[in-house]
Image (tube, rainbow, N blue to C red):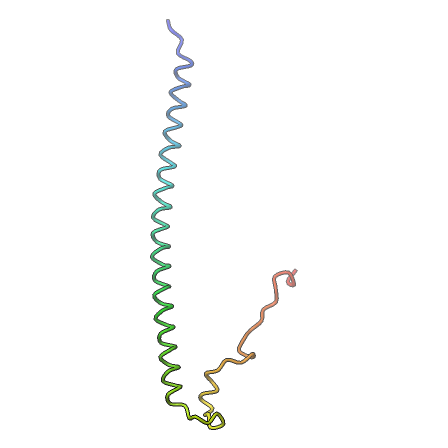
Length: 98
């Protein structure tokens, strides 16, 4: 009768190695899918930024062409478009919450 203790351990090691390989391949596929998703989101946001910037620039062009040349004759609506320091909200840092 032949004792196959070491052969069984080798088979178990190979089986475990195959499981690790399958898990690694599955992780690679999942991360590739996530990378494609993030790439598509990045492109979508880049397109959105370009579109919004174009709309803002068009709005400023229309505003500049309609603005009177005299700065004192600016209307109150024009002043609403300009940002002032009061429109910025400052939040305390996390360290001050302790």
